[in-house]
Length: 278
Image 1: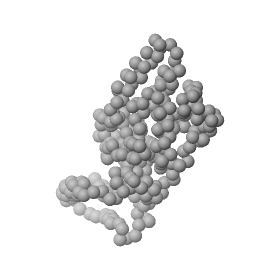
Image 2: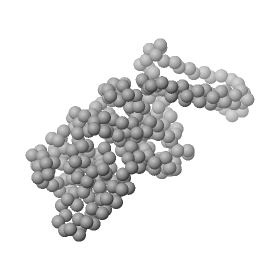
Image 3: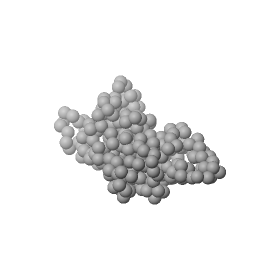
Image 4: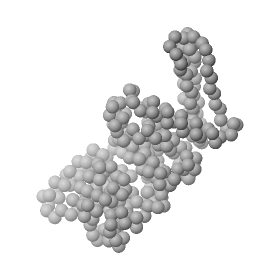
């Protein structure tokens, strides 16, 4: 959810909990109460509007839900506004809340910013996780397939992910604003995330994806895979021609992969490089 569309911290917590429970059945209000060291009965009173959290308790709730510092600060601000008794102070707090909401009203705020990031900024941002763990990219791609998006168990099974790990990945993809949970249904906001030129994550990402691919290939029947590897002698002129042909082939692959409705997630690896300088 986009928490900045709400001004009641209870509604935000309730909505996040409902969304998470549909994905991970181990997420309950009892576990939330235990994590912040209060009775579930008191938690119920707060959520029903008959009591308030303390600042520390609400901070622990946000930590339990793995919210970002920015989101946590906004939710704590809502609590401060609700508990304030002085009209002048409430007016100042409301002005601050509305200012933040105006800045965040566009649900694609983060995506617009990431497309403008330079390599150094990108590599130290939340988006770096996408390229330092192959599961993030694979889950993201599989969610773009309607059949798999409506049958999340299929994704978990394909990647051999535990329920908790899968929930963690979905939460992170949502923080990156690549996906969004709308009334319990996952919506893919952006189908691809590209590394900016000069990023130091390019090589680690390639190596991780190749390692993941190699492990997966071992479990496939020969009829289910197409693999090719060759070591050959040639010359620089022929090597250049092969590079040109390969670039043309990649353009064809890009066009072909976009044809028709997606029904599965595939992997394409190909390496061409010289072992020596000639």
